[in-house]
Every structure is written in structure tokens, then in C-alpha cells.
Image (tube, rainbow over the protein chains, first blue to last red):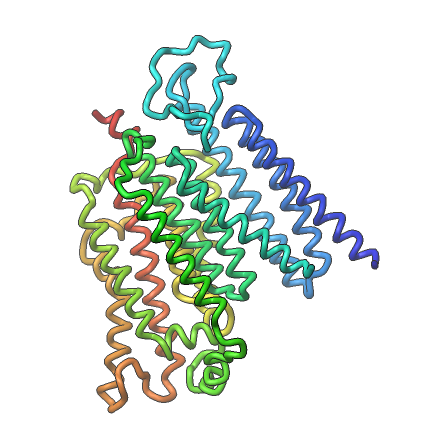
Length: 128
Length: 310
């Protein structure tokens, strides 16, 4: 196995590991904000590592630049999307207000929860 | 085991898992998210089947625009978690299983060494006017199918626009005034238009084509619309109607130009196939872009706007 192959394997595997960690965070974190944090940071880093690994076996400079452009565009798009989602959620959410589907109640256990459930409440939180 | 086979098995399992999660989840929002993931996995499946054109179209239209439309629809429902009133659950399930069994029987029983039309296509490629086989088939040899597709799209656009509320001209769907989004649009808007034109042009020799270019252009329009930019060509009027039907009309003209010089329908004059295909594709992508964009912007106001405005 040549050095390039070894470096490529390391980069691709660590990129996949970062994606796995990001998905783990998505599944385990209680709130939308923490999930956005996990997704945008960890997944972008994973994508960067995978792109670096793919660059090592690219045929020409044009392909390398295309891969770099893909990574930068994804970075910009996901960062902006994460910011927009968090921004919209921050302005829409009131403590004890309507729950978004899939959220746990741990996030605002400190605040008193109003009796109104709202239309967004999930009546069957245990099911997928 | 061949590593490609393991990857294909993973993709198939993920497809089945995301499809069942999309159908069986009681929460509509989650179902739509799984549908988007399903669209993305289908794009990967198309790549594994060596069909990059289909993968591009699947990712752009199914996972991208249709996902956005469905999310918009879920946002409008007053009670998205209404219990499903399924009258015939077992009938649907039984019919689906029968269909699955028939498909498996058809796939497993196909002849082993069927070369299909590959050689006939390779022989006819010189007269097609393009150098990419998929584009040649879609826009020259089997252009009737593509013509019907664009007819369906135009019909859908008219129906979608007819359902638009009359008062919605001055209202913008979820105007998001965010400096970050404005900067992103300022940078990405021109890039998306340029990539869309490139996809259209590259369709003659590489994977690409009118549908992919139109979907990307529509996505750029959706992004502009979401950030509050008024799109004057989307107001109901002559311009919108012309853009919507231009693809259909140009395709129809190219199709009936054959009989005028003694050739059958949908046959282009010899030697003019290349330019004809380019012209058709340009108007096709314009029509597709405006159709998909107007379907997105023609949506009634969301629940939040309804509550705030009432």
C-alpha cells in the first residue's frame, strides 16, 4: 500500500467517523439548537476530510479545484441554513410554548410549562 | 464479497428503511424529512447504476424541490398529526406486495444476454446531432416521451397557478430578512445561474440537460424568493404565460416541422438535429424552471402568517 493510499484511507475513514459522530449528536441531543450545532460543525469537518481524501486521487488540477469548490459551497450553504433555522426557531420559540415534533422537554425544565400543548405537540413521542 | 456489492446492499437497505420511515411515521414533518433522505439515497442508487443524468435530476427535483414543496405543505396544515383515516389498509398493502412480487418475477426472469438497443443506438449516434447517448435518446430518438413530460409539467403549472389565492400578489412567502442570507444569495445566485447554463450546454456531451438545468434555475429562484426578493416575472400576466408555454410550443413546432418537409412527425430535418436540440433544450429548461418556481411561490400563506394576519 503506497503512502498516498494510506493517507487517503486515513482521511476517508476519519471523515466517515466525523459524520457518524455528527449523526450520533443529531439523534441524542435534546434540542434543535444543539442538533444544529452538531450537524453544521461536525458534518462540515467530515465532508472536508472526505474531500481531501478524494483530492489525493484526482486526475487533474481541474478535478481538485472542483472538489474544493464543492466543499466551500457546501460549507457556505450549510452554515447559512443552520443559522437561518436557529434564528427562526429562536424567534418563534417561547418557553412552555408549542413543542416542535421530536423535541424533549428537558430543554426548558427550568421554566414552568404552560398547560397549552398547541398544534405542534407530538401525541405519540415514543413512536418514529 | 465484492466491495461494490456490499455498498449496493447498504444503499438498498437504507432505501427501504427511509421509505418505510417516510410512510409509517405518525409525524408528517418527520415523514417529509425521510422522503428527502429517500430522494438523496435514490440519487446514490442511480449513480451506482451508472446513470448520472437520472441521479442529477433525482437529487435536484425529487430531493430538492419536491422536498421543499412538501415541507411547505406540512407547514400549512393546521393539525399535521391528524389520525389517518385509512379505510382499506390491508387492500393497499396486499396490492403493493402483489406488485412487488410481479416486479421480482419480471426482473429475475429476464433473458440473460439481452443487449437491448445499445448497438442500434451506437450506430445511429452520428445522425443524432449530439454526442451524449442519453440526450440523443431523450431529445431525438424518443422525443415523444419528453414532449409528453413537458406537457404534463405545463398542465401542472396551470393547475397550481389556478389554485393560487387572488390576494397573494403583494404577499411574500416567509420573507426572511437576514444579512447572512443576503450575502449568500449575492454570491450563490450568479453561481447557480452559471452552473445551470453549464448543465444545459454540457448535456450535449456529458450528463446534464434541460431538466437538471431547469431544476437548478428553479432552486435559485426559490432561494431568491425566500430572501424576499420580488420576482416580477412571476406575477400573473402575459410574461409568465409565455415563459410557461414556451418549452411546449417550441417542442411542438420542432415536432411538426417534420411533416412540412415530408418526414414523419418528431423527425428533424437532416443536419439540423444539433441546433434544433439546443434550441428545444433552452426553452425547455426555461419552462421547467418557471413551472417549478411558480408552483413553489403559488402556495397559500403559511399558518404563522395566517395567525399573525388575522
